[in-house]
Every structure is written in structure tokens, then in C-alpha cells.
Image (cartoon, rainbow, N blue to C red):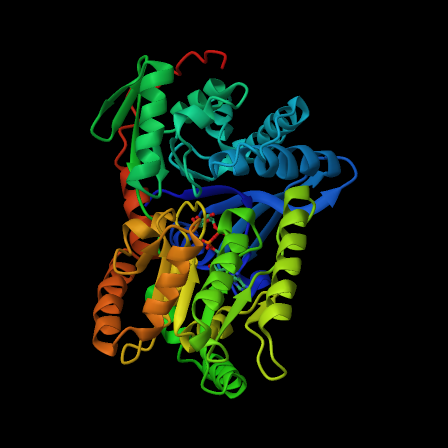
Length: 468
Ligand code: ADQ
């Protein structure tokens, strides 16, 4: 078995993280099996970049991390990754900031990761690079002479060509993806947008999974990420989950709970969700005092201004809504800014009659799948899901809505509250089948098997970047 090298912005060390997400567990499993290494940023800041690599091994998983300078974090992480690419790739060009410093910092830090990884790579290793922080890394490793099989997976949407061309030097960035052998997206929709860009902007050719520009051909595939469904379903009946369920039920007093769980991010549509719920309260006074929305939203990327703004907006919206509708013994929104361990989270999902997952745009959305996996098969809740989440393509038996429409959200909540048990069971079963079949191991294997099947002797001529 070839050794796997995973390279991503953040590295999750098994014994440090305690309660890891599905992605970290799946990658750790593959790394352990292949005796591979996970390379990335330590999360630490240093005064001056030294290139010192911190090696560790936890629970059979080897990691190699570097510390970054303040300027790196400003320009690469908070800058190009989270102020330029994240909003643009989530269709928010209104929030995207284009600054030369950001792009320079992004390339500098990617060179630093390439320098870090280069001496650790053996010729037979399989390299798997993750996400928008590291798009040009493969090209940089090729420049250093590495001919390994290399894959890249994008965890966020791929934007329509008309939006992507607003990015300065867009074609240079996209050209660098042709250094990989396999490029993966969550859905056919993101894959189609990528192909469209390649055909229209680069004069490329698409034949099945193969995309050719000049004399370089790569595979571009849709490979939807899943969760560890079995483990999550078990977590939902663990002692911690049951205790959490009991605590919640005691406080709910027979009220139906709607739950939302998201990182505090504008792409998650939280403002629109609160407005949709407000519309429901206005449209349906008969449900007052009988329902409440628990929104769990731990802050993220607090150094970025647009994230500070969304936090302030939500604080004020939740306050206004509670002020308008609360009574001495009923508050319609519980707005919680903290994270929970996974077993407690599973207990929260299971106690909720409705899972409200309404991102404006999302590569996949794992919360939707976790909500499904955590349900009681004999009395499952209803998932209300945005059409614009990648997960909507697999979870067709959710109530699919347009998250921008408060009326649709209000109608869906009303319908979910009245849904008969047999319909809830039928919808849940169909969704659970999909969540179980295309789980996190399936995703990891589908991608790495493709990568392992790549013929290393095919020509690897890099396409000439044209200035965008
Ligand atoms: P995210 O944007 O972070 O991921 P998502 O897929 O929903 O979005 O994953 C969030 C994870 O964080 C879930 O596992 C969830 O349980 C966890 N989480 C959220 N709030 C939490 C809380 N309060 N306490 C504990 N855990 C919490 C990006 C892309 C997505 C894509 C994933 C994986 O934006 O579209 O699905 O990567 O590829």
C-alpha cells in the first residue's frame, strides 16, 4: 500500500483534539493504515518564520507542522483564503476583498508548505491536498521535481465562471490545479462550473471525467463527502446524548424544538433563518408557546470584519425577536454561541423535532447528515434543507426550500410540525440510506482509489498560465 501524505491548512492531532469531526477521523484512519503523515499549520504564531518542522505521533498518526508569522496569518489565512476566496466561492463577490498583499502572502505561505513537505515526500507516496487554502501547492511541489500521484479536494463550492473571472489572476490560480492528477468536488453542480470555466476561459476539452488543457489531462470528479453515520447514530444513544436529551426535554416542557447548528458564518444563512422563523411566528400565532428555535452557533474567524458584523446582526435580531414575542415563561429563540462535544451534539439533534439547515451556499453541509444520523428511527424528526447546500442533491427527501424566502421557510416549518409519523419515517429512511451508503469511509476510499489508479507515466506537461 502506498503511503498517504495529507496536506491541509490545519492538522488535527487525535489525542489533542479529543472530540474530532468525521473528516479528521477518516483521514487519521487512512494515515494510520498507510503509515503516512499529515502536514499543515500548527495553529501557532511565531515572531519570525524559521521553517522548523514540529513532528509528532499521536495514536499512530504522524503529523508535521510549521508555525506561521503574524503577517502570514493576516495575508494568507484571514486575507486571501477567508476574505477573498471564501466569499467569492460562496457567490458573495460583494464581500470579497482583492488585495495584492493577500495574493502575495497566499503564494508565500504555499511555498512555505511546499518547502516543508518536499523533504518528507518519497517517490511512491500519494499526496492529497485539501481545500482552498492550498490550491497552488501541487504546482509548487511539481516545480520542486515531485512526480508523485497528487490529488486535490475542494470542500467548498466552485463558483460560476462569471463570478470567478472577477478574481485578479484567476486563470493562474485555476491553471495550477492542472498540476494534480485528480481534482474532486462535492457535487456535479460544482464540477460542472469548473468544467465550464475550463472550456470557456482556458479553451480546454472535457471528455467524461477527463479534462484537458493543452497537453495536460487530469480527472475532475464529483465525490460527495459523508459522515461516520454508524458512529454518529451510536453517539446519539450514548449516555452523554441521553443526558443532554433529558436536560433539554425538562426545559422544553412538551414544546417542539427546532434546531440549527452552524459555525457563525454568513454563508450559513443565519440572518435569513431568523427572519424566516420570525415570519413563521407572525404567520402562525397558533404555534406560539408551543415551539422554540435553538440555534447553536460558535463564533469563527473573529478577526475578519464580515464575521464580526454577522455576529452583531444576529445578536440584535435574536434580541428583537425575543423582545417581540417572549412571555415570562417562553422565549422563542435560544441563541447559544458555544461548541459542544459530538456526543452531546448528537443528543441535541435527536431531541429536536425539526433540523433547520438553511445555508445560502454550502459545498456539502455535514450538519444535515448528522441530524439525520442522530434521529430515533421510530420517531424521527424532519429535516428542512436549503436547495443551495451540496447535501440537497443526496438528501432529496428533506423538505427542500429556498433559504432566501421567509414564506417558504415559514410554510416548511408549519408542514414539518404537522407531518404524520409514517411520512416522517419514510423520508427519514430514504435519507438515512444515503447517509449510510455514502459515508466518510466511502468518500475517502472513492477518492484515494482513483488517485492510486493514476498512471504515473502519463505526460505531465504543465499548461502555460495565461494572465487573468
Ligand atoms: P463547514 O463550513 O465548517 O465545512 P459543515 O459541513 O456543516 O460546515 O461542518 C461543520 C462541522 O462542525 C459539523 O461536523 C458540525 O457538527 C460541527 N459543528 C458546528 N457547530 C458546532 C457546535 N456548536 N458544536 C460542535 N460541533 C459543531 C466545510 C464546508 C462544508 C463541507 C465541509 C466538509 O463549508 O460545505 O460540508 O467543509 O467538506
